Image (cartoon, rainbow, N blue to C red; front, side):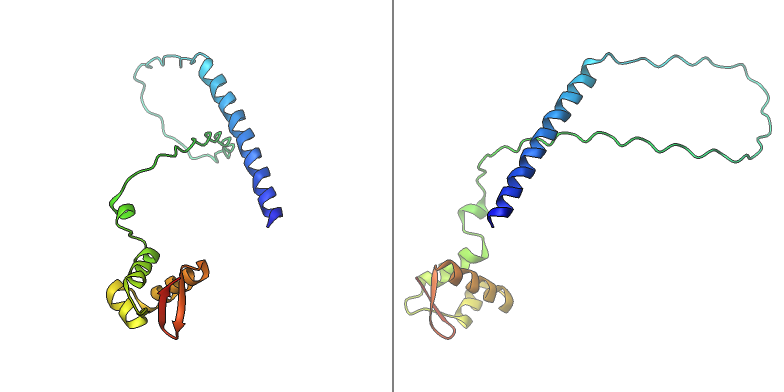
Length: 144
């Protein structure tokens, strides 16, 4: 696990170094004066000639565009109804379990949370792994 964390830190350093290089290149491009394209002269109307099809030379591939530097994410706490009303599945299941006096059965949890069997099973597993609920007997859960 520590190896993964150190690798992630190295990658993050490399990305930040690349971002600063891209910012420098971008500022250099912006500092250069824009070149004006020469004005095209309108040619006198000439009779059109028949165009013969010739084998066209393959075009050279375009150079890849420079990637833009990633924008720094702002950490602003947004208040939403979902955050205030405990909208997550785990919170809903834990709320029903904590309100029950003698423990919540699976049938009771299904009825009150309106979740499918798989969703409820996953939520119960995660809550039990966190240590927020305990199993009293098979199919009966109480808050830890």
